Length: 269
Image 1 (tube, rainbow, N blue to C red):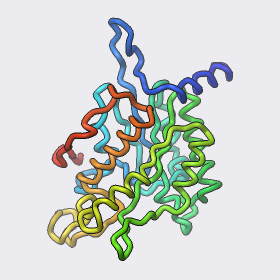
Image 2 (cartoon, rainbow, N blue to C red):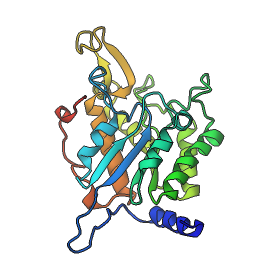
Image 3 (tube, helix red, strand yellow):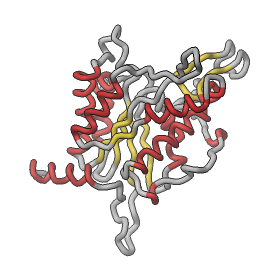
Image 4 (cartoon, rainbow, N blue to C red):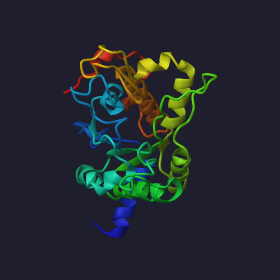
């Protein structure tokens, strides 16, 4: 493909909502478009030995209609940098196709200044790494979407929810505006949700477990970063609603945005 052709494909992908190939063609059977997720443990697939810990990517399919598949490549402990350095972005880009979406959510582990394998500085190396996801998706005719990092559960003495990601969300917002990339502000939406719930009710969304409550955590757990099913479902709802509100997805692409989704729908392989 010529450089000019590649640029044209990328521009079209950036400008149009997700439409599976064959949609609107009489007699055509639409293919399944794929929503790819590149991110960290808050989105990642969890397995039976980690239950009830749940990544929001596990719940995203509940809010998407069946012609959209989810390829969840989010991985515990990764930053925008380490995900690339380990070849995980290359794996995603090898499978991504025109018309697909690439959701990019990093920030939790980019903050870890003591770990050079993961640390990025918000206004320089974080932005530089995010640009590689954006450029890689666009070069393949797919549409990148930046997601600010989902907020942790932190409250002040007055019971108000606190932001915990420093300058990373602002840096991502600025980059999205500069590059014309759709942005779903999960950080702002989740912070508002935890603030609405308050300190005690919000524990039910995270892996706060009493001793004996889960065989995987016999001594209990107090984790204000990772979700249990209820939290993962609500964050996935925020993501799907944000994609719809930004025009990335059409009404035909989403479902159940205003309906309850049972925690029992979550399963761990």
